[in-house]
Length: 184
Figure (cartoon, rainbow, N blue to C red):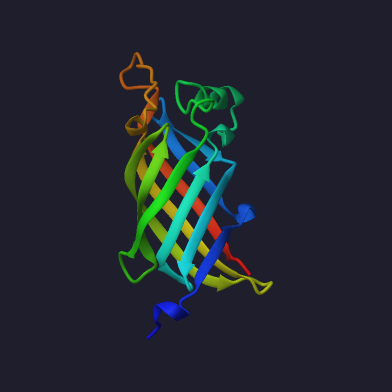
C-alpha cells in the first residue's frame, strides 16, 4: 500500500497535433455546423498515473473559434455570442472523474465558465488508456462528449424561422479528442 509520502504528482501535456476541442450545433433546425477552438492550454495532473485522481484546468481562447466561415466566426466573437472583447477565456475545472463501467467509459464532472457564468457540467469520456508511442513516450488518449444549453451561459441570440423553429439550436454538443503526453 502506498503512503502519502511516496505518491508522485504527474504532469500531463496536451499534444496539440493530435488533439481538438470542438463542438456541433444545429443550423436551420437540420444542418450540423461544426467548429473548433484553436487556442487552448491545460494544467493536467494525476497522482502517479492514476487518472481517477486527475485535476484538470483548461483555458480556451474564445476568439480562436473557427467554423471555417469568417463571417460566422466574427459573429460568434461579437456581443451576440462570446463577446470576446470583454470575456477573454472559457474555463473548465474538473471536480471528479469516475468509472461508469469496466470498458473504458468514465464521467467527468466539472465547472464550465463562459461569459463570467459558472455552471457544473457532466461529460462522457472514453479513455483509451495509457499507451507508449513508437518513440517511447507515454501517452493517454481520451474522447470527450457532452451536451450543454448555450443559453445557460448567456449565449442567447437567435432568429425565428418562417417555417417554425429557430436559426441556431440551443443545444451544443461538445466533442473533444485529447492526446496527453506525460511530462518527462
